Amino acid sequence: MVGKKLFLILIGITVALTLTSCQMAYEISLQGSWEVDEYYRNGAEDTQSFHLLFGDYVIKFHSDGDFTETYKAGNILPLTITGTWEVLNNGGQLQLVDENSTRTFDITMVTTDELRLYRTLGDGGNEELVMEPKEES
Image (cartoon, rainbow, N blue to C red):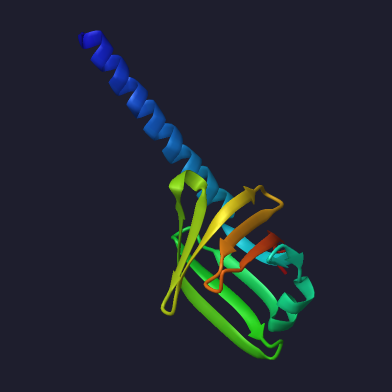
């Protein structure tokens, strides 16, 4: 009986460590600067419109859990948004919280070369961002 309880406890610890390490791996993979390579709205490619609305868009995920978004609204007005980021649901979602909003994205892919984020919008539509690392200059 003690052996079975010990076994179940060890299984529970192993699962918890595995989930924690997966989440940590996602957090490490996300750190750094990313820019939008492709943008889809309701499944249709709309990258050009995204770049017109959010010129020079870059989001930087800092290792301390903060993020910085910079872009030119309407490709004219420089804006900077700061907040916190967190990986949720064992690496399945990314949550961005700033003073004006909370945005939650499904992480559909993350590698060193590509980050894909998907979310449902309030109007019933959806968007997908395909991002690549921003070359540091």
